[in-house]
Length: 438
Image (cartoon, rainbow, N blue to C red):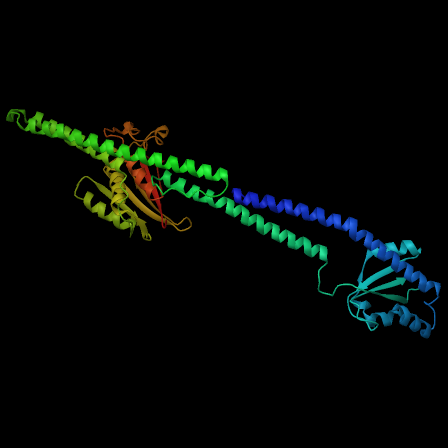
Protein backbone atom coordinates (compact mmCIF):
# COMPACT_ATOMS: atom_id res chain seq x y z
CA UNK A 1 0.00 0.00 0.00
CA UNK A 2 1.47 3.36 -1.09
CA UNK A 3 1.24 6.10 1.54
CA UNK A 4 3.10 8.97 -0.11
CA UNK A 5 1.44 10.48 -3.22
CA UNK A 6 3.13 9.89 -6.56
CA UNK A 7 1.79 12.90 -8.48
CA UNK A 8 3.48 16.30 -8.42
CA UNK A 9 0.22 17.83 -7.25
CA UNK A 10 -0.08 15.49 -4.26
CA UNK A 11 3.60 15.83 -3.35
CA UNK A 12 3.43 19.64 -3.45
CA UNK A 13 0.29 19.76 -1.30
CA UNK A 14 1.88 17.30 1.13
CA UNK A 15 5.04 19.41 1.31
CA UNK A 16 3.04 22.57 1.99
CA UNK A 17 0.98 20.76 4.63
CA UNK A 18 4.08 19.40 6.40
CA UNK A 19 5.79 22.80 6.38
CA UNK A 20 2.66 24.47 7.73
CA UNK A 21 2.35 21.80 10.43
CA UNK A 22 5.95 22.40 11.50
CA UNK A 23 5.30 26.15 11.47
CA UNK A 24 2.17 25.68 13.61
CA UNK A 25 4.00 23.50 16.11
CA UNK A 26 6.92 25.95 16.38
CA UNK A 27 4.51 28.87 16.74
CA UNK A 28 2.48 27.07 19.37
CA UNK A 29 5.60 26.14 21.36
CA UNK A 30 6.90 29.71 21.07
CA UNK A 31 3.63 31.18 22.32
CA UNK A 32 3.52 28.65 25.13
CA UNK A 33 7.10 29.25 26.21
CA UNK A 34 7.21 33.03 25.87
CA UNK A 35 3.61 33.94 26.71
CA UNK A 36 1.59 31.19 28.37
CA UNK A 37 4.20 30.00 30.88
CA UNK A 38 5.15 33.51 32.14
CA UNK A 39 1.50 34.45 32.40
CA UNK A 40 0.71 31.25 34.25
CA UNK A 41 3.54 31.83 36.69
CA UNK A 42 2.34 35.35 37.27
CA UNK A 43 -1.22 34.20 37.90
CA UNK A 44 0.01 31.44 40.23
CA UNK A 45 2.10 34.01 42.14
CA UNK A 46 -0.90 36.30 42.51
CA UNK A 47 -3.08 33.41 43.69
CA UNK A 48 -0.47 32.39 46.24
CA UNK A 49 -0.21 35.99 47.45
CA UNK A 50 -3.97 36.16 47.78
CA UNK A 51 -4.06 32.96 49.86
CA UNK A 52 -1.20 34.24 51.98
CA UNK A 53 -3.27 37.35 52.68
CA UNK A 54 -6.14 35.15 53.82
CA UNK A 55 -3.76 33.31 56.13
CA UNK A 56 -2.34 36.59 57.39
CA UNK A 57 -5.79 37.64 58.59
CA UNK A 58 -6.43 34.13 60.02
CA UNK A 59 -9.62 33.90 57.97
CA UNK A 60 -9.43 30.14 57.46
CA UNK A 61 -10.69 29.61 61.04
CA UNK A 62 -12.43 32.97 61.40
CA UNK A 63 -16.16 33.30 62.21
CA UNK A 64 -18.66 33.33 59.37
CA UNK A 65 -19.31 37.07 59.71
CA UNK A 66 -15.63 37.91 59.20
CA UNK A 67 -15.36 35.69 56.15
CA UNK A 68 -18.54 37.18 54.62
CA UNK A 69 -17.24 40.70 55.23
CA UNK A 70 -13.92 39.81 53.57
CA UNK A 71 -15.78 38.25 50.62
CA UNK A 72 -17.91 41.37 50.24
CA UNK A 73 -14.83 43.60 50.08
CA UNK A 74 -12.55 41.35 47.95
CA UNK A 75 -14.93 38.78 46.32
CA UNK A 76 -12.69 36.08 47.80
CA UNK A 77 -14.69 33.44 49.64
CA UNK A 78 -13.60 30.89 52.24
CA UNK A 79 -15.88 27.84 52.19
CA UNK A 80 -16.08 24.38 53.60
CA UNK A 81 -15.82 21.42 51.25
CA UNK A 82 -19.61 20.90 51.34
CA UNK A 83 -20.29 24.53 50.47
CA UNK A 84 -17.64 24.52 47.72
CA UNK A 85 -19.16 21.43 46.09
CA UNK A 86 -22.51 23.19 45.94
CA UNK A 87 -20.98 26.35 44.47
CA UNK A 88 -19.11 24.71 41.56
CA UNK A 89 -16.15 22.76 42.93
CA UNK A 90 -17.65 19.54 41.63
CA UNK A 91 -17.13 20.62 37.99
CA UNK A 92 -13.71 22.22 38.57
CA UNK A 93 -10.58 20.89 36.81
CA UNK A 94 -7.35 20.19 38.69
CA UNK A 95 -4.15 21.80 37.30
CA UNK A 96 -0.91 20.16 38.35
CA UNK A 97 1.48 22.90 37.19
CA UNK A 98 -0.44 25.65 39.01
CA UNK A 99 -0.73 23.49 42.14
CA UNK A 100 3.03 22.91 42.07
CA UNK A 101 3.81 26.62 41.64
CA UNK A 102 1.47 27.72 44.44
CA UNK A 103 2.79 24.96 46.72
CA UNK A 104 6.37 26.03 46.04
CA UNK A 105 5.66 29.68 46.89
CA UNK A 106 3.62 28.96 50.00
CA UNK A 107 5.70 26.08 51.34
CA UNK A 108 2.71 23.77 51.85
CA UNK A 109 0.88 21.40 49.48
CA UNK A 110 -1.86 23.18 47.58
CA UNK A 111 -4.64 21.83 45.38
CA UNK A 112 -5.55 24.33 42.65
CA UNK A 113 -8.66 23.85 40.55
CA UNK A 114 -10.49 26.04 38.05
CA UNK A 115 -14.23 25.93 37.33
CA UNK A 116 -16.12 27.51 34.44
CA UNK A 117 -19.54 27.57 36.09
CA UNK A 118 -21.09 30.69 37.53
CA UNK A 119 -21.07 31.01 41.32
CA UNK A 120 -23.35 32.81 43.71
CA UNK A 121 -20.77 35.55 44.31
CA UNK A 122 -20.69 36.95 40.77
CA UNK A 123 -21.03 36.24 37.10
CA UNK A 124 -17.32 35.63 36.45
CA UNK A 125 -17.00 32.68 34.04
CA UNK A 126 -13.82 31.37 35.72
CA UNK A 127 -13.17 30.78 39.43
CA UNK A 128 -10.07 29.37 41.09
CA UNK A 129 -10.43 26.96 44.02
CA UNK A 130 -7.44 26.52 46.33
CA UNK A 131 -7.15 24.09 49.25
CA UNK A 132 -4.12 23.87 51.53
CA UNK A 133 -2.97 20.67 53.18
CA UNK A 134 -2.91 22.53 56.49
CA UNK A 135 -6.65 23.24 56.11
CA UNK A 136 -8.00 20.17 54.26
CA UNK A 137 -11.68 21.01 54.83
CA UNK A 138 -11.47 24.63 53.65
CA UNK A 139 -11.42 26.07 50.13
CA UNK A 140 -10.52 29.56 49.00
CA UNK A 141 -12.59 30.71 46.01
CA UNK A 142 -11.01 33.49 43.90
CA UNK A 143 -12.78 34.93 40.82
CA UNK A 144 -10.86 35.53 37.56
CA UNK A 145 -12.14 38.79 36.12
CA UNK A 146 -11.99 39.38 32.35
CA UNK A 147 -11.93 35.74 31.23
CA UNK A 148 -13.62 34.46 28.09
CA UNK A 149 -16.94 32.71 28.04
CA UNK A 150 -17.27 28.98 28.43
CA UNK A 151 -17.43 27.94 24.76
CA UNK A 152 -14.72 30.15 23.28
CA UNK A 153 -11.40 28.65 22.23
CA UNK A 154 -8.13 30.20 23.39
CA UNK A 155 -7.21 33.00 20.94
CA UNK A 156 -3.74 31.65 19.97
CA UNK A 157 -5.14 28.23 19.10
CA UNK A 158 -8.00 29.70 17.11
CA UNK A 159 -5.68 32.04 15.18
CA UNK A 160 -3.26 29.22 14.38
CA UNK A 161 -6.12 27.02 13.13
CA UNK A 162 -7.49 29.79 10.89
CA UNK A 163 -4.03 30.57 9.49
CA UNK A 164 -3.37 26.87 8.86
CA UNK A 165 -6.69 26.30 7.07
CA UNK A 166 -6.29 29.39 4.89
CA UNK A 167 -2.69 28.48 4.05
CA UNK A 168 -3.53 24.90 3.09
CA UNK A 169 -6.53 26.05 1.02
CA UNK A 170 -4.46 28.69 -0.75
CA UNK A 171 -1.63 26.24 -1.40
CA UNK A 172 -4.07 23.66 -2.76
CA UNK A 173 -5.64 26.20 -5.12
CA UNK A 174 -2.24 27.44 -6.29
CA UNK A 175 -0.91 23.96 -7.01
CA UNK A 176 -4.12 22.99 -8.79
CA UNK A 177 -3.92 26.11 -10.94
CA UNK A 178 -0.24 25.37 -11.67
CA UNK A 179 -0.90 21.73 -12.63
CA UNK A 180 -3.93 22.35 -14.85
CA UNK A 181 -1.84 23.14 -17.99
CA UNK A 182 0.33 20.11 -17.18
CA UNK A 183 -2.72 17.84 -17.12
CA UNK A 184 -3.89 19.22 -20.47
CA UNK A 185 -0.40 18.59 -21.87
CA UNK A 186 -0.50 15.02 -20.57
CA UNK A 187 -3.84 14.29 -22.25
CA UNK A 188 -2.66 15.79 -25.53
CA UNK A 189 0.56 13.75 -25.42
CA UNK A 190 -1.48 10.56 -24.93
CA UNK A 191 -3.58 11.44 -27.98
CA UNK A 192 -0.52 12.11 -30.11
CA UNK A 193 0.92 8.78 -29.00
CA UNK A 194 -2.27 7.08 -30.23
CA UNK A 195 -2.03 8.76 -33.64
CA UNK A 196 -4.53 11.54 -32.91
CA UNK A 197 -3.63 15.17 -33.37
CA UNK A 198 -5.58 17.52 -31.08
CA UNK A 199 -5.78 21.25 -31.78
CA UNK A 200 -2.91 23.37 -30.43
CA UNK A 201 -3.00 23.76 -26.67
CA UNK A 202 -3.60 27.15 -25.11
CA UNK A 203 -0.40 28.62 -23.75
CA UNK A 204 -1.08 29.39 -20.09
CA UNK A 205 0.50 29.10 -16.68
CA UNK A 206 4.06 29.99 -15.73
CA UNK A 207 6.72 31.07 -18.21
CA UNK A 208 8.32 27.61 -18.20
CA UNK A 209 4.94 25.96 -18.77
CA UNK A 210 4.20 28.27 -21.70
CA UNK A 211 7.54 27.37 -23.30
CA UNK A 212 6.86 23.65 -22.88
CA UNK A 213 3.37 24.02 -24.34
CA UNK A 214 4.70 25.99 -27.31
CA UNK A 215 7.35 23.33 -27.98
CA UNK A 216 4.75 20.56 -27.73
CA UNK A 217 2.45 22.31 -30.20
CA UNK A 218 5.31 22.60 -32.67
CA UNK A 219 6.24 18.95 -32.19
CA UNK A 220 2.62 17.84 -32.69
CA UNK A 221 2.30 19.88 -35.89
CA UNK A 222 5.59 18.48 -37.17
CA UNK A 223 4.50 14.88 -36.52
CA UNK A 224 1.17 15.50 -38.24
CA UNK A 225 2.93 16.97 -41.26
CA UNK A 226 5.23 13.94 -41.47
CA UNK A 227 2.22 11.60 -41.24
CA UNK A 228 0.43 13.46 -44.02
CA UNK A 229 3.51 13.43 -46.24
CA UNK A 230 4.05 9.72 -45.62
CA UNK A 231 0.45 8.94 -46.49
CA UNK A 232 0.64 11.01 -49.66
CA UNK A 233 3.95 9.45 -50.69
CA UNK A 234 2.71 5.89 -50.05
CA UNK A 235 -0.48 6.52 -51.98
CA UNK A 236 1.50 7.96 -54.89
CA UNK A 237 3.95 5.07 -55.00
CA UNK A 238 1.15 2.52 -54.77
CA UNK A 239 -0.73 4.22 -57.59
CA UNK A 240 2.37 4.30 -59.77
CA UNK A 241 3.07 0.60 -59.12
CA UNK A 242 -0.38 -0.54 -60.17
CA UNK A 243 0.07 0.79 -63.72
CA UNK A 244 3.05 -1.44 -64.66
CA UNK A 245 1.39 -4.36 -62.86
CA UNK A 246 -1.67 -3.91 -65.05
CA UNK A 247 0.54 -3.86 -68.15
CA UNK A 248 2.27 -7.05 -67.00
CA UNK A 249 -1.12 -8.71 -66.51
CA UNK A 250 -2.24 -7.69 -70.00
CA UNK A 251 1.04 -8.93 -71.48
CA UNK A 252 0.66 -12.28 -69.75
CA UNK A 253 -2.78 -12.72 -71.27
CA UNK A 254 -1.17 -12.54 -74.73
CA UNK A 255 1.09 -15.54 -74.07
CA UNK A 256 0.41 -18.68 -76.13
CA UNK A 257 -2.03 -21.20 -74.71
CA UNK A 258 0.72 -23.75 -74.13
CA UNK A 259 2.24 -21.29 -71.60
CA UNK A 260 -0.74 -21.27 -69.25
CA UNK A 261 1.42 -22.24 -66.31
CA UNK A 262 3.58 -19.14 -66.87
CA UNK A 263 0.50 -16.91 -67.14
CA UNK A 264 -1.00 -18.33 -63.95
CA UNK A 265 2.24 -17.84 -62.06
CA UNK A 266 2.48 -14.23 -63.23
CA UNK A 267 -1.12 -13.54 -62.20
CA UNK A 268 -0.56 -15.04 -58.76
CA UNK A 269 2.52 -12.88 -58.27
CA UNK A 270 0.54 -9.82 -59.36
CA UNK A 271 -2.23 -10.64 -56.85
CA UNK A 272 0.35 -10.97 -54.08
CA UNK A 273 1.89 -7.63 -55.03
CA UNK A 274 -1.55 -5.97 -55.10
CA UNK A 275 -2.27 -7.37 -51.64
CA UNK A 276 1.04 -5.99 -50.34
CA UNK A 277 0.30 -2.60 -51.92
CA UNK A 278 -3.13 -2.59 -50.24
CA UNK A 279 -1.46 -3.25 -46.91
CA UNK A 280 0.94 -0.36 -47.47
CA UNK A 281 -1.97 1.97 -48.18
CA UNK A 282 -3.96 0.66 -45.23
CA UNK A 283 -1.06 1.10 -42.80
CA UNK A 284 -0.23 4.61 -44.00
CA UNK A 285 -3.83 5.78 -44.23
CA UNK A 286 -4.77 5.44 -40.54
CA UNK A 287 -8.37 6.11 -41.48
CA UNK A 288 -10.06 7.70 -38.49
CA UNK A 289 -13.11 9.03 -40.28
CA UNK A 290 -15.20 5.95 -39.44
CA UNK A 291 -17.89 6.67 -36.89
CA UNK A 292 -17.96 4.99 -33.51
CA UNK A 293 -20.69 2.41 -32.92
CA UNK A 294 -21.79 0.58 -29.80
CA UNK A 295 -21.75 -3.12 -30.69
CA UNK A 296 -21.21 -6.47 -29.05
CA UNK A 297 -17.83 -8.08 -29.70
CA UNK A 298 -19.41 -11.54 -29.77
CA UNK A 299 -21.63 -10.48 -32.66
CA UNK A 300 -18.64 -9.42 -34.78
CA UNK A 301 -16.86 -12.70 -34.04
CA UNK A 302 -19.90 -14.76 -35.04
CA UNK A 303 -20.18 -12.87 -38.34
CA UNK A 304 -16.55 -13.59 -39.20
CA UNK A 305 -16.89 -17.24 -38.19
CA UNK A 306 -19.74 -17.63 -40.68
CA UNK A 307 -17.51 -16.24 -43.44
CA UNK A 308 -14.71 -18.66 -42.58
CA UNK A 309 -17.26 -21.47 -42.49
CA UNK A 310 -17.07 -21.57 -46.29
CA UNK A 311 -13.62 -23.13 -45.94
CA UNK A 312 -14.15 -26.80 -45.21
CA UNK A 313 -10.73 -27.17 -43.61
CA UNK A 314 -11.22 -24.28 -41.16
CA UNK A 315 -12.57 -25.32 -37.77
CA UNK A 316 -13.27 -22.63 -35.17
CA UNK A 317 -14.30 -23.50 -31.62
CA UNK A 318 -16.13 -20.64 -29.88
CA UNK A 319 -16.05 -20.03 -26.12
CA UNK A 320 -17.96 -16.76 -25.93
CA UNK A 321 -19.04 -15.44 -22.55
CA UNK A 322 -21.66 -12.77 -22.08
CA UNK A 323 -20.22 -9.35 -22.94
CA UNK A 324 -21.59 -5.82 -22.59
CA UNK A 325 -21.73 -3.56 -25.63
CA UNK A 326 -18.54 -1.69 -26.45
CA UNK A 327 -17.92 1.53 -28.44
CA UNK A 328 -15.79 0.59 -31.48
CA UNK A 329 -15.12 1.44 -35.09
CA UNK A 330 -16.85 -1.59 -36.49
CA UNK A 331 -15.07 -2.00 -39.83
CA UNK A 332 -11.63 -1.46 -38.29
CA UNK A 333 -12.25 -3.96 -35.50
CA UNK A 334 -13.53 -6.57 -37.95
CA UNK A 335 -10.26 -6.10 -39.82
CA UNK A 336 -8.41 -6.88 -36.58
CA UNK A 337 -10.40 -10.04 -35.92
CA UNK A 338 -10.14 -11.22 -39.52
CA UNK A 339 -6.38 -10.63 -39.54
CA UNK A 340 -5.82 -12.56 -36.29
CA UNK A 341 -8.03 -15.45 -37.38
CA UNK A 342 -6.40 -15.59 -40.81
CA UNK A 343 -2.92 -15.61 -39.24
CA UNK A 344 -3.95 -18.40 -36.88
CA UNK A 345 -5.02 -20.58 -39.82
CA UNK A 346 -2.12 -19.60 -42.07
CA UNK A 347 0.72 -20.09 -39.59
CA UNK A 348 -0.90 -22.36 -37.03
CA UNK A 349 -3.30 -25.20 -37.62
CA UNK A 350 -6.67 -25.76 -39.25
CA UNK A 351 -8.27 -25.72 -35.78
CA UNK A 352 -8.37 -22.62 -33.59
CA UNK A 353 -10.22 -21.51 -30.47
CA UNK A 354 -11.78 -18.05 -30.06
CA UNK A 355 -12.87 -17.03 -26.56
CA UNK A 356 -14.11 -13.84 -24.94
CA UNK A 357 -14.69 -12.68 -21.38
CA UNK A 358 -15.54 -9.57 -19.40
CA UNK A 359 -13.34 -8.12 -16.65
CA UNK A 360 -15.79 -6.16 -14.50
CA UNK A 361 -13.14 -4.78 -12.14
CA UNK A 362 -11.10 -3.24 -15.00
CA UNK A 363 -14.15 -2.38 -17.17
CA UNK A 364 -12.69 -4.23 -20.16
CA UNK A 365 -13.74 -6.88 -22.66
CA UNK A 366 -11.17 -9.44 -23.81
CA UNK A 367 -10.82 -11.54 -26.95
CA UNK A 368 -8.40 -14.46 -27.15
CA UNK A 369 -7.50 -16.43 -30.30
CA UNK A 370 -5.40 -19.56 -29.95
CA UNK A 371 -3.93 -21.82 -32.60
CA UNK A 372 -2.07 -25.11 -32.17
CA UNK A 373 0.91 -24.45 -34.39
CA UNK A 374 4.65 -24.16 -33.63
CA UNK A 375 4.34 -20.74 -31.98
CA UNK A 376 6.97 -17.99 -32.09
CA UNK A 377 10.36 -17.88 -30.34
CA UNK A 378 10.14 -15.90 -27.10
CA UNK A 379 12.76 -13.38 -28.23
CA UNK A 380 10.70 -12.61 -31.35
CA UNK A 381 7.35 -11.95 -29.66
CA UNK A 382 8.05 -8.25 -29.16
CA UNK A 383 9.20 -7.75 -32.75
CA UNK A 384 6.19 -9.05 -34.66
CA UNK A 385 4.30 -5.78 -34.24
CA UNK A 386 7.11 -3.71 -35.78
CA UNK A 387 6.29 -2.68 -39.38
CA UNK A 388 8.15 -4.72 -42.02
CA UNK A 389 9.61 -6.88 -39.23
CA UNK A 390 8.64 -10.46 -40.06
CA UNK A 391 9.08 -11.90 -36.62
CA UNK A 392 7.14 -15.03 -37.52
CA UNK A 393 9.63 -16.40 -40.07
CA UNK A 394 9.81 -19.50 -37.91
CA UNK A 395 6.24 -20.16 -39.00
CA UNK A 396 6.93 -19.64 -42.68
CA UNK A 397 5.89 -16.00 -43.16
CA UNK A 398 5.88 -14.72 -46.70
CA UNK A 399 3.93 -11.48 -46.18
CA UNK A 400 4.94 -7.86 -45.96
CA UNK A 401 5.21 -7.73 -42.17
CA UNK A 402 2.44 -5.12 -41.85
CA UNK A 403 -0.53 -7.24 -40.78
CA UNK A 404 0.12 -7.24 -37.05
CA UNK A 405 1.40 -3.64 -37.15
CA UNK A 406 -1.96 -2.57 -38.61
CA UNK A 407 -3.73 -4.68 -35.99
CA UNK A 408 -1.91 -3.03 -33.11
CA UNK A 409 -2.49 0.40 -34.63
CA UNK A 410 -6.25 -0.18 -34.69
CA UNK A 411 -6.28 -1.55 -31.13
CA UNK A 412 -4.32 1.48 -29.92
CA UNK A 413 -6.81 3.69 -31.70
CA UNK A 414 -9.48 2.02 -29.53
CA UNK A 415 -7.38 2.76 -26.40
CA UNK A 416 -6.83 -0.98 -25.89
CA UNK A 417 -3.85 -3.31 -25.95
CA UNK A 418 -2.85 -6.47 -27.82
CA UNK A 419 -0.27 -9.08 -26.82
CA UNK A 420 1.09 -12.38 -28.16
CA UNK A 421 2.32 -15.31 -26.06
CA UNK A 422 3.09 -18.97 -26.52
CA UNK A 423 0.68 -21.38 -24.89
CA UNK A 424 2.27 -23.80 -22.37
CA UNK A 425 0.68 -26.73 -24.22
CA UNK A 426 1.71 -25.52 -27.66
CA UNK A 427 0.45 -22.95 -30.08
CA UNK A 428 0.24 -19.17 -30.10
CA UNK A 429 -2.28 -17.02 -28.21
CA UNK A 430 -3.22 -13.58 -29.53
CA UNK A 431 -5.15 -11.56 -26.96
CA UNK A 432 -6.48 -8.02 -26.96
CA UNK A 433 -8.72 -5.98 -24.69
CA UNK A 434 -10.90 -2.95 -25.25
CA UNK A 435 -12.22 -0.46 -22.69
CA UNK A 436 -15.99 -0.34 -22.15
CA UNK A 437 -16.00 3.44 -22.33
CA UNK A 438 -13.66 6.16 -23.57
